[in-house]
Length: 504
Picture 1 (cartoon, rainbow, N blue to C red):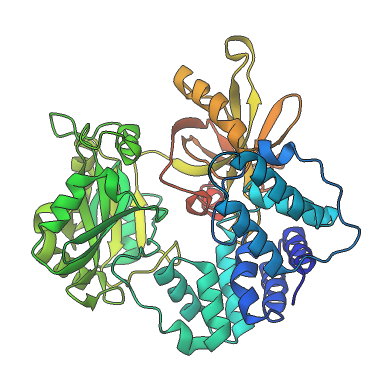
Picture 2 (tube, rainbow, N blue to C red; picture 1 turned 120 degrees about the vertical axis):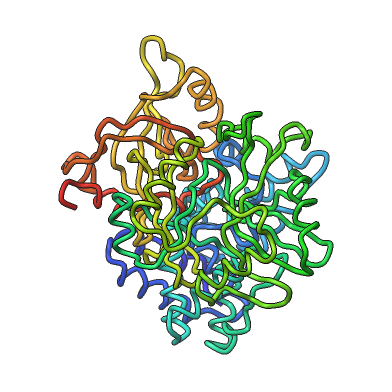
């Protein structure tokens, strides 16, 4: 049995180095020492996640506990997983007190270092989606397999602990058993920004150019009459979107998995504000604002998985099953027609266009550059790290945001700037109410947050700077909107920010 202390030590070693190889080696060494039943919970812990998912415990509950630490480490990984599961099961009258007692029992068996780790774990402060890439490589190293089968299994399962368990149990053969399962969401393929349309066209060759909608990403699954709808983060929203369920159920097929966007339209057919679309995902009255789907990929059709086929063949399948609901697109356009489509998208109220390699397979994340997004203004999706209390008219409100870019090597987000511009009175009020729920600590001027919220900012560019650890700083950054459909793993990387440097 491996102790929690080994996980804490490995986590500390990973946090202390910027070397991706060193992170991978440290994690792989620990994974290789685990008993089979320890692999899944330890993988979750190493990725900064609670085994089994959220447990309904916030910072205020933990901050109210004053528990002396144990003098020596004794907690095993299995005991920690069992204790967390117990906390998660507590429901009903008096649950707050009973949950606090269970947490106190767990923390009382932990050393000071383990207590700090567990508190940060429950508060989400250790959860770094960017670490997933390092975890994939470490799992591959520990199992003695190539990274690609691990990456593919993770895409299909959506669960890193299950992927690690399979890899260390049965190697490449066990990983190959993962298949696209209709009804289980697939981690989505993402796009990276392009400098402009001409460069994207020149880079990719034979392409599809399609509208980039100002909507919310959806993935729909249908097996006969059973339909499921998922968001970008794989959260199921089926019960909130009956119009999408009915539409997919009416398609001429037995089974299908479609990737696309959905958005609300006004009476003229133009997109409503993004926040109104996202508001539908939690609406109490699901008929209060109709959503319209626009599909751009088909991953499965009538018993046949299409993930590994070129995009051009997946688009043929999409045309067969959902031609009336395809996103506006042109295949293999010349530069002039592509520019016309870009202008048409902007005139229709959308963000720009996507340029996609017609020969590319479907792969989760930003690996490679097969999908490029082109917009008229510079924008970045960044992680909110902290907020400072405002002055003058903004006194009493959390205002100036600290912004971080994703570290592709699995570290915490890297700070690249601050801004208070673009924050409306409504957003200021929302931030002040919401941010304490994500608080990890504070000082006289600043509230520091678990790195979960993603905000989209417009900017005039970036410049080299020694002020921030990434060596770059945002210029004229302005908040455009929050992105509740995205998590920290979907934020733009520090590499993307540095790529915006003049001559970069």
